[in-house]
Length: 289
Image (cartoon, rainbow, N blue to C red; front, side):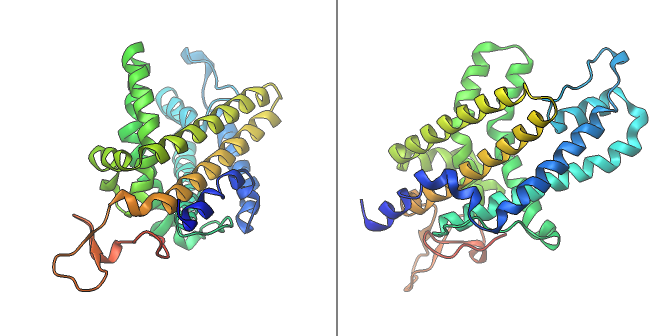
């Protein structure tokens, strides 16, 4: 293993302390507080008399919003205000995750600051769409199978989806293109670094199980437990994106997402279907979308 890869891998054990390094840590509490406030307001608009139990403290705001739209059409004014606010908040978080991936992949060691309001359209929304596209391709099929009570397909879709999702997110961010999350690109990339990727998936799985157990314990605490569980989920997302970025710093040169242009004398590389100006080479300073 060469020195740069050794240095990058040395950052993995320190990933748990990464959310506390840098100015970005000061945005965690406001983001979680706003998300919790949206949940509480939305939960007040879901009537029990429609045959659907009111949301409990553990229901995510997105699920509450869907329930509210289905069972309380009269609250369209409130939902019209809170829906975009929730989407903007999720995009804000996605913008931070995109910055983490880019900064970690280029060797950064500190948590970057949160995107500003002016970066919503240029940075946060594209980051949100990239994560959403990867989730739609690899996680939604498991949700559909679960809703249809198809146990076998659910297990298969869940295992495959969770295994492919991190690489899909990485491809979408590093190549700055939604189409980069396609299964062909993802599977070929995994096949080139199976051991490193398997190690990363194992670490992410252990961290996820730890986060899941913590949230179960926190739910026993009235109100405060839900706030802490939201904070724990955001903490896990930041740590996971840090590990994914470090993985790219270690293995980006072997993924072969870039190829030399025919006849080029200098080190100029392109990727099929993506404009040259949008390309980032492994080890280069990554530009945010």
